[in-house]
Structure formats: C-alpha cells, structure tokens
Amino acid sequence: MLRFDLAEIIRTPGMHHTYKVNEPPYADEDVEYVSPIVGDITVTNTGSMLLVRGPIKTTIAMDCNRCLETVRVPIEADIEEQFDLQEMDDSQHHDKVTKVVEEENIGAFEDKILLMDVLIRQATILAEPLMPLCREDCPGIPVKTADADTAEPLKKSPFSDLSKLLEE
Image (cartoon, rainbow, N blue to C red; front, top):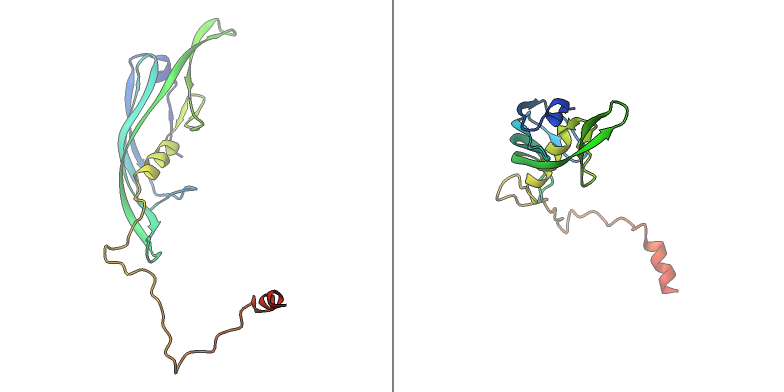
C-alpha cells in the first residue's frame, strides 16, 4: 500500500514536498491496475489546509461494453484534494497539535499517514470511460443462429411445470 507520513508537513505551515509515485500493478476492490501507477504528488501545508495535487498515469483492465472481452484502458488523472487542518490543545504535553479533518468518509488518513491508494483509486474511477470498447467497430456478443435442418430440439424449460399451474 502506498502511504506517506505527513507528520512533519502537517505541523509546519508553508512546507511542501513532492513524492514520486511508482507503484507496481495490483488489483483493488473496484479497479484492476495492469501497469505501474506513476506520477508526482505534491503535498502542501497552507496553514489552514493540506493540499494534495498531482498527475498520475496507469492502465486498468475493464470489460468491453459490447462483447465483454477484457480491455486495457490507459488512464491519466489529476489528483486534487484538500483537507482542513485544525489546531487542538494537547493536555498531556501542554502544546498545540495540528490534526487533519476529513469532511467526508474518504478514509484517506490514518492519523498523520496519507493513504495514497485511496486517492489514486478515486481519481482512477472518475477518469475511467463509462462505456469502454475493445475497438470502435466492435460488433458485440456474436449471435448464433441455427439452421432448420441442424437445429437441436429445444430443451424443456425448467419453468414449464410451473406454467401448467397457471393454466389450471
């Protein structure tokens, strides 16, 4: 899993750092990455918020919308997220502590660790095509027609007995 420890950036306003992303392919719950995930992610502390930005590139596997064959789809996405920072009193150390506040249930942070795979998955899902095709002229699932001479007799439907109950 791709994780960045942002403890120093979170406690230092004005600090920023660029992280190189070069993650090998893996299968996620929603996405199957078939090529490495590469990109440059910049994390910036503006004082009041944490900005996470940068482009990523990868290739994912999807099913063709017509013939259901597996298609390799190249993805280029920009990650642009912002998280509010909240300063809180630490009663144990008599000091101020800065905490990342997530407005939605994104689940991108575990304390001060950024779970980059969550943001990559979200950006990938938003960038993937709605109806991928293996090729523009894909005919779809082939329809088999039977000749009258070679046609096999129709098999008895498992619901034929139930249809007799409707007739009675």
